Image (cartoon, rainbow, N blue to C red):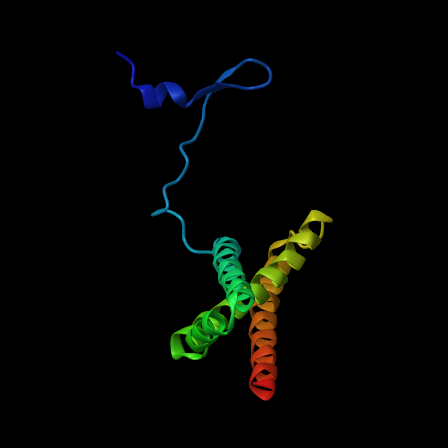
Length: 143
């Protein structure tokens, strides 16, 4: 009886020769790299933006419902937990925006060499921090 895993590793080259495919390395083998970490955080920020969009819809529905509902949700958003959620949503928004620009450059064929990938990754992190701080300075001034 043949091992199923072994059978799945066998493939053919374009000229028909049998070759043994490598197994995909497990997560324990990989060392964290900037590009993979930024990619994972990009996906997580997308999920956070989806949750934030639901919170925005709740806020709009509360505003349309009446003063009581709006005051209740506004009170929550002004609490420490609400401000923390809004701050996290702001970080996710700017991070996703900056990595989106990075991905647009990749789609155009730029920035694939390793030094440029590391540089643009650092730029994304720095721009996220600066834009988030500037946004919250504006929020505190207007608030």
